[in-house]
Length: 268
Image (cartoon, rainbow, N blue to C red; front, side, top):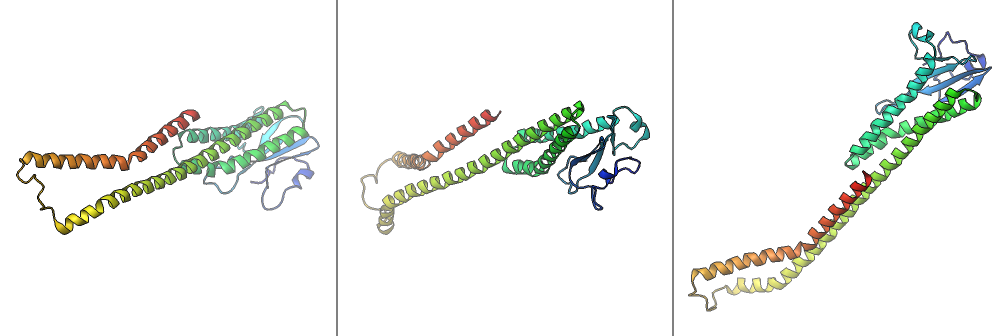
């Protein structure tokens, strides 16, 4: 977007623009005229920045390059309202990202917030710096003070949101890495116990495979109930051994769930 042709700005301001694009966000003052070069709040899918110009005349009247209607341009403080709406758009996007942060559940959610919030954070930093420069150029304008303070609050909120999201992502990744390490250790411990059982019963299994189980034991003529009691006892013993092998895994899983609940309650 180029400067509106009907704007009667000093030549010293017009000469500060290049031929390709309006350039970065900045404030320019000459002979009591103040021109703000601002960028519209960036959206995730937007690669280029839309530039909007705000002109403050020496009389204190504001004009905006977004004012398309002649009737709107004639309204009192129409340009100032457009500038306030410009900052309000940043505020609405910041509120939307804050809600997404509250609803984030996994690493992908946190990463998407960081990916989208980074250009917005950079834009609001430049916007705040621009309004601070404008405040220094026109120190008597109370509206510029309010706008500068509004931009500072937006920058602070986005900075906190960025830090919280990045910390949450780092914690989530560290927690998952710790969980993977814990599962690997548990698998190793379970393998050790199974190896112990195999070392104990493998010779017995080999002997019974070679010589069979037809040696007299004194139970050949016992009632069928004895067979089922031994069978049931073997199954029960198998469950006891299984519990012994996976005992620590269950305990550590419960401890991990308790830690996750405490962390979520702390962040609410």
